[in-house]
Length: 536
Image (cartoon, rainbow, N blue to C red; front, side):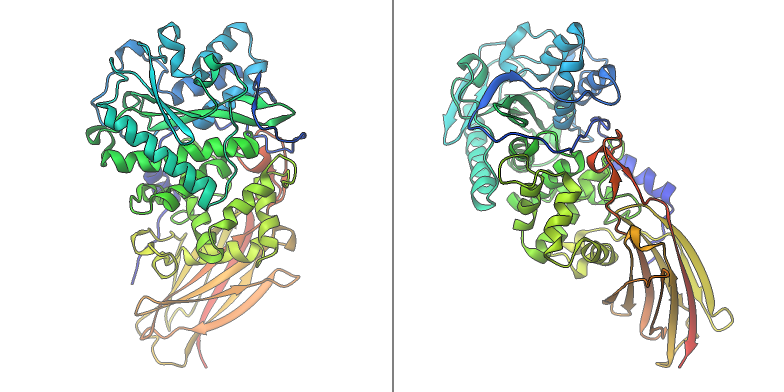
């Protein structure tokens, strides 16, 4: 029988060792915008609401995300393992949004952090190329590079490889999957747009900054301040000694992830962070399924730890990366187009839904089983991923908060749980070896909160062969439910109760790291199970 009880303290320790990023946890507006999309970027800096945590912290987080905090730019050199992944895209997005609220000195630094590498050695923070750059263009993309210095790729072949991969990513994400193409920068002066209207990718030595790559927004679309163009920066060689994988594999997953951020900028560059990062991590699986780099994050998402809300963005533990599994669940159930439908509802352009992440999600699922039932099933299947997910045999199982062991002498036990919005808690019930024979069952008396928090439960029965059966349980108006399931120790390994709080109600724009920067209205809701073994 499996033993998966893990204290939350132990789980948190595990999370720290898996992901330690340095992006912002402050601003994530998600409120609706106005105006229609235009074909090209406007030559105006990005603007938006000030970051809720202040300009100093926005700048500090951007420097830290780029690996520049407390480091002499001239001391950076390749060769060492990258280690824990750092992601700079959303830290730069937050900086771009906050620029209008910065003072003159802060704004100069912010613009330097957001500048393209072709700004050159005059860049005061040392991010620019130290020599004249070249470019190789083809299809929809231009790859910019230098031939000398630390930022030079190992050879011209790698430049061609990067160009080929980027065009394949473009074709896959905008063609096969049907997403909008990034905003073109064709209308900008040639000194600012890489020389033409193609999508620009810059090769740069990033391993010393613990970066794989990043994309940065630049200018808003004329007539729509929620859409923006962008450019991407990728490592100049993805050397295996630094990144731990074959260079081509690392390039493929990084290109898929970062280019999807550029696509997102043409839906709503100020969208909620959890949606932006979880779907960008999910799309790695679609484009480069054989690489499986994103499996490392499952330990920090709801597959392993269901107690943290699905919509949390947290740079210490990186829960949002692990929650790509939610989109994988929906894709395997409804097809991968379900994700693009959510993004269209979240889009801030004519014909789109013009709402924020979670509202977009619930709108799309309303025509299916509804978010509450789908989320409850998601929480349930994560107790035994190998039975549902196509690659689930490689995935971790969800932890529980306790086990109720029932015997003839102690046939009854109870356990309470507190569950936050868009999260779940698991409790196992196990039969002693003396409880044998087909007549044995366990009666589960369940109690939950009021209907406003959309409570639900899933009851799972694991047999000795490792197969699971599941029932989704709704509570009545009084918050009560009862169910009876087989409990013979000869056939049953364990019964698991998953308590689900599927609330998606928020007070928005409160500077919190959840949907619409909001405060959830239904956190910390009480649930309880009383389990009693009996013979029919």
